[in-house]
Image 1 (tube, rainbow, N blue to C red):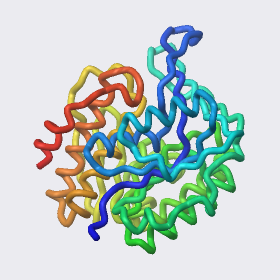
Image 2 (tube, one colour):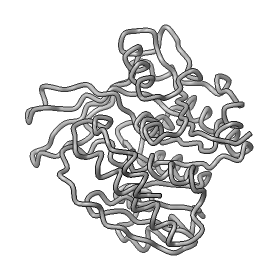
Image 3 (cartoon, rainbow, N blue to C red):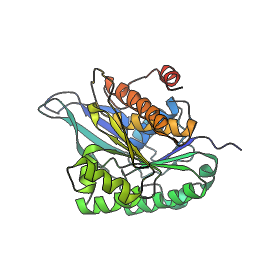
Image 4 (cartoon, rainbow, N blue to C red):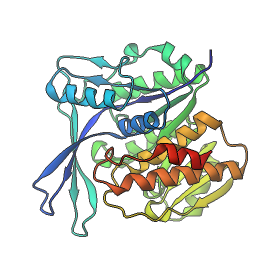
Length: 313
């Protein structure tokens, strides 16, 4: 049987995005990095499975229905009566840019547990993706470690997005320690430039890259630099691609769109074998990431994926 599909493990969120400069009015959107990536791979035509814990209230039903609308398989997610969905508030600063303001989780212990994972889904899929969004919780951390074991044993390509939100962590040092330990277990690592400096405790790109890539032995490293573009490192060689010029309205979820495009490339074409192929992957990820900024919310930019895929092909 041909292995096909992407698993995304995480926690679904509702993003409450500010719509006024005083941050008093908010518009709700389905969100969470692992949800955004799952939606992206599904829109790109890949079978996508989302593994999380859902509740039975109206907000949980809203989240699940939105996932189903996106074509995401939620059959392996688990429901409990006590689970409440997490919320993230995104405010606008004085420059008009949106930033992560607060994280609300009424039921932090209600996460998918290791014994609720289904090993067989890893055996039939090709890519396993996860982020750091729940790694600060011991129970979720153990679940992720178990999922990684299943994914590695099944021969999955393993992808990790550092996606750091310091407000969720007990300390900066604990955050660095845990995220670093998971970076070392992945084939693909995506990291934002500011996160790169935070994890390596330097402000010099060359030194940070040397520590992150050569010290931690990452097979495929991707660094996003916002409107400046993105950098990829493979076999110690760097490839840089500038970002396409677009009229950016909201950058929420741009990195997740970038990641979903990368997963599509690895799923459909395999691991890049030379710099030309790596460059092609990077160009496609940049295009999808940039297009995601053209509308409010992380899942609202309805991209012409058929056209983008034609360009990629």
